[in-house]
Image (cartoon, rainbow, N blue to C red; front, top):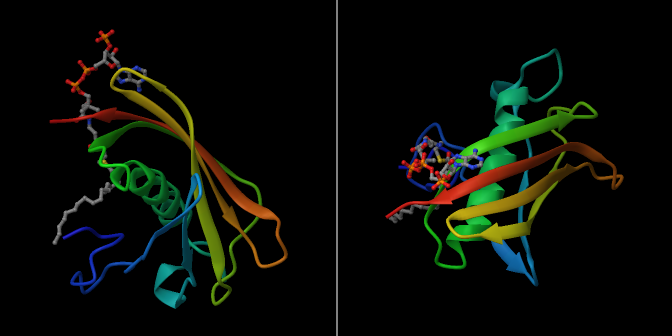
Length: 123
Ligand SMILES: CCCCCCCC/C=C\CCCCCCCC(=O)SCCNC(=O)CCNC(=O)[C@H](O)C(C)(C)COP(=O)(O)OP(=O)(O)OC[C@H]1O[C@@H](n2cnc3c(N)ncnc32)[C@H](O)[C@@H]1OP(=O)(O)O
């Protein structure tokens, strides 16, 4: 029962994804229970959004892969109650290793967070 995407997880984020050309997208509005710093979404949960949108890019191409490495830059706070768009793209693919990038975008179009990650295909 995935914390990020399962509709049956009672404490999950219930994210839903779609492919838009070469981009995987989701949206999320953080609530009080997702807060870290006062009034802002917890950075670990921002990382969860980024990790999941990249994993889902792969899953939607029929690729089962686990996150092996991830780097996140938090540029701006994500305020509680404000909807954000989250998107990912493939950067590079070599053998079992897939490199992707993702962004969390505020309603004014500015990026609040960016990530790059390496995924490894698993059986
Ligand atoms: C009702 C319907 C239900 C449907 C169900 C649907 C569910 C699915 C839905 C949607 C999917 C999306 C959900 C995903 C959720 C988000 C993603 C996560 O949170 S994943 C969890 C967090 N990640 C881990 O827990 C990984 C823990 N690590 C591992 O398990 C292993 O380390 C693993 C698998 C990553 C690699 O282990 P190895 O044993 O397979 O491979 P090795 O031998 O270590 O590496 C192979 C090669 O890759 C290189 N490599 C490994 N890591 C690297 C790295 N970070 N950078 C560069 N190279 C690396 C190595 O140097 C090696 O290279 P050389 O063959 O020697 O040349």
